[in-house]
Length: 248
Image (cartoon, rainbow, N blue to C red; front, top):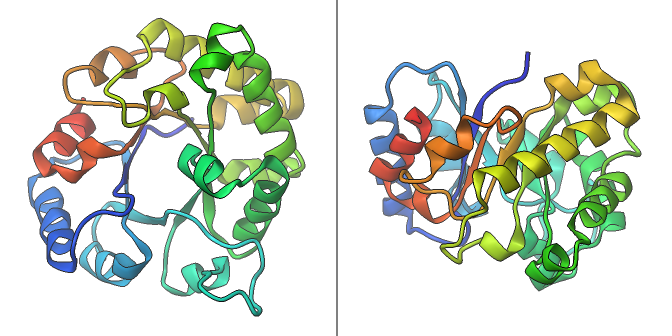
């Protein structure tokens, strides 16, 4: 049975004190839940958030990792380093990493394998631009991202993968995919996984929607059959908004 998951991607935001306060507010106001909640702070605050969430239901994720386990890669952080901190997840392939830093599917395939080799679970992101959607190329775009970045994995490894579908045209824009658009793409992703790995793996894979989720629109999205939660950006920086989304 696949999990319902809500991820807070704080991106490049918050001071040390703000991170601690936000983590504390989420912990103190979260009701007993049957879903998984994951916080993804910047590298600098991972230790603090891991410490703050010990003995709680909250998991912690990094926002990225390097494809190599170690080496002369100034400024980079490896999956082995993240695993040593006690992290549970790493986000890979976010649209901002793809766009700003040129990360392609080939590189992401290496990152995925590296993260899994160190015992981390992966939240693998995929998404299309507005031009690709308007031209009808969005289905092929997502299929290509899955095939080239993820489908090299053996069947058992897919059990440690969560998919984050983020329409690029909705990330940080205030525009949200309609519930019909989200369900259509999530169903396509699940079908692609089923074609590659079988129905059991597909039905056990959590697929999250990411793209300007707010407390006001998230209920309509979360009730869709193939939407298993959210990858939350801006709204996760406000404890009340994030808790409202979790409770949705």
